[in-house]
Every structure is written in C-alpha cells, then in structure tokens.
Image 1 (cartoon, rainbow, N blue to C red):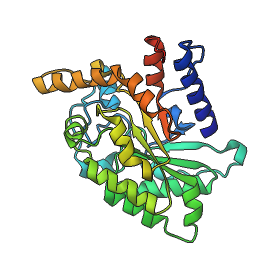
Image 2: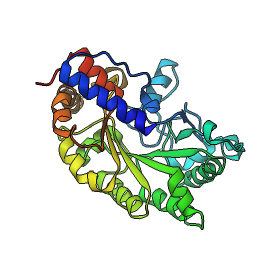
Image 3: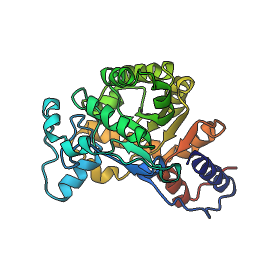
Image 4: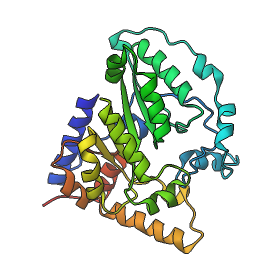
Length: 291
C-alpha cells in the first residue's frame, strides 16, 4: 500500500510541474491510509474531544440528532458496543490480510484503551495489520505500550502502526478547534515515547491548523516516518461563524488553503511528506503549475 501511495505522490508532483492533471485519486478520507476501518462505539455519539470540525456532528445535524451535547468521558464506556470487543477474528492468509484503521469515529480514552488493545491483539493474531489513530493522551499511549510489552512485542511492533493527529504546534489553534483534546506538548511526548519504543509513527496534519507547517514538520520529523498534510474539508458546513474569534480562525483556514502550493514547494523534497486527497483537488481545481 505504501508503494502505491508513494507512486501517487510522484504523479501528483508531476502534475504540479506540468500543470496537466491527468491522474485521479481513486480513494480519499480514511482510505488514503487504510483498506478498512473499525470502531468500538456507535458513530452517532458525540466524542468528548468536542472538535469544532467533527464530521460526526455534521452527520448528526443532518439527521436532526443532538450533536452539540458533549458526552462526559466517564459515560463513553456505556456507548462502547460489547459485541465489537468480543468479536472473534478469523485467521486470514497474507492475500486476505487487511490494513485496519481504528478508531475512525471516536478517539482513544482511558476508559476504552484496554478494549482497543484487546481488539488490536485479536486483529494482529488473525493476520491483519492495524493502524491506531488518535489525538493521543500520554496515559493511553503508555497503556498500549505496556499491554504489548510481552515476548511477542517485536511481532506487535511490525503489525501495529500509529497515526497521531497534530495539526499545529500552537496551543491556541488546538484549543480553539479541538476543544478538550490534548495540547501540543502532550501529543509530542506521545510521539517521542512511541518512537523510543520502536513503533512506526505517522502524523496526520489534517486538518492543518497552522500557517507554518514547515516549522511543524521540522519539530516532528526526527521521530516519525511520515507526515500527512491536508486542509479542513467542508469547513463552511462543519463550522458556523458566531463570534469575531470564529471569523478570525475561519479566515486563517482560508489562508492555509491558499498557501498549500507554497507549502508543497517547501516540503516536496522530503520523502516523509505526503498530501491528502483534498490538497490534490485544490491544486487541480485551481490548475496550479510550478515554474
């Protein structure tokens, strides 16, 4: 899968050089990273992180469910579906192995991290690879590391990857957009801890929340194998302007989008940098061509 992604990136850069956008991005969203997704709780329940750009909230509003109510973290266990944890995973051959992203519609918290570990272990024992995705909490990352600190830990490190969301190194950006999620310093500690324990760590800077992604890249680069940059999709429907502060941050998003060609020029020489499908679409729609 990684080779296919790298090949698409090469084609994208060629489009930028020629101004001719003949390629198409067949998949987007979570499928930029994985072949399937798995969650332990219902996607209709608001996540305690309370991110302003949460797509689950948009779905809930569409179907007139109450997505503005933030579930207390202590109640999250009640919304975990037991059958998702107790499910048995049938052994598969290499040809039928999947790269499973978990979770995709909620995060990893202290009261569901053990269940995440149990399900992850079942998946890798069945022959699948797992991509654990989170705005990480240090307590949860320590729990995962300790859970798999067994005689088969080296096997686990080959089967489990991490994709940690860090869209900015500025806590003002994080607190505005990502509510109750951990601040930059805690997420950065998680990156370094996983790296020190031999795990493969990638970064999702989607949505990109800082106007200085080059600095963010240089801070994180020594500890990760990839950094994915992407814009906030459908920001006008995800987020309604109500205050001058809202207007300020929405304007910042528009600046970030318009600067993506410049960001690409500055970072395209590094093999650790990847671009989400939305960035390709922006460049294609604006017929961006590098001199």
